[in-house]
Image (cartoon, rainbow, N blue to C red):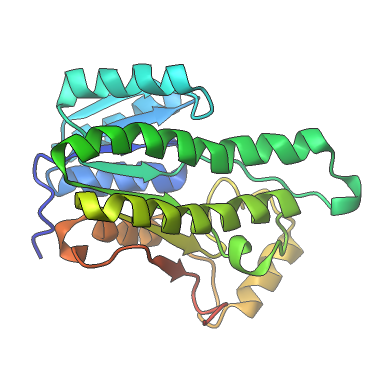
Length: 250
């Protein structure tokens, strides 16, 4: 299937993580130009190298999703290197596991700032650009935790991801009349660097609760993101797509 991604410019925030790296590689393999941001410059550069290894053009730079000026600087660099932005993948985020009883306000605010406010800042900045061209697609990474509350995740993480789901709908209502689609995905428990430190009994319990009997893989999430961003999903808008092995069916 031709996804219509050739020469599209894709921005992936938090692109140095497992899902981001897989997105970079799959987008590039389908002919897209890939720009990767991460607070860890070396991680962003490794993701860009993966994109180049499959024949894609790529750009990497450090960017803090919570800093408006840094985001604008990064996006200007992308446009100079690759051209106008067609697709944004809001992938940047942090995980926090802590009981409500022990959670500080600082813990709450830090997760909210990165996981939710960062999505707002990047989306707003990119939407201004997309609206001028009346085209584009945004896909954000929410979570199963945002639908059911924290299982192993803290309440701050779960609430931030619930916010991403709601923000996706608001962005979709705003952007749709300009020809811009906005969607999000809700991964379940995925085998990434984020979940690998979890206690073995927690991971085993999640596998038992999942009808498919295993954790998800980063590439399984990335392929859905790429599809939603592409022309193949041209009438999917304001949706949240579950990628959870059946642990939640709603």
